[in-house]
Length: 94
Image 1: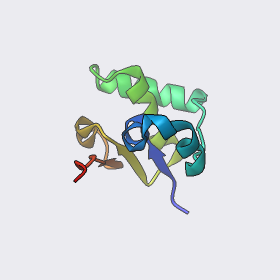
Image 2: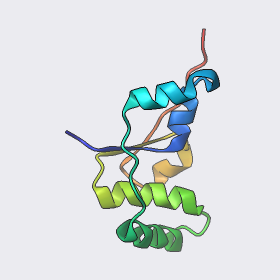
Image 3: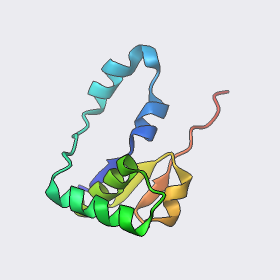
Image 4: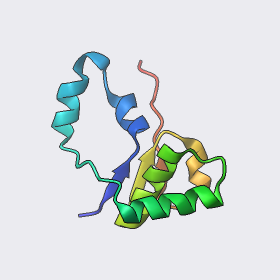
């Protein structure tokens, strides 16, 4: 099974605030820890991309260290940073 890292922006966009707790549990997500390998990789990301915020660097580093096949985010600017990035845009409801 392929590993996919999901940025919080994607999860937040999918959730109705009234149902957030139940819907997050239903997704059965695994929360990855920021271990030493991820921290070191995040520092590398920050060194290469000075404008990258630490939380964003940690997400990108997690995808790299864990060997994710994709990283889902709502941040289109990440597309230029990694070929793993897949930008998810919320479509307007009809």
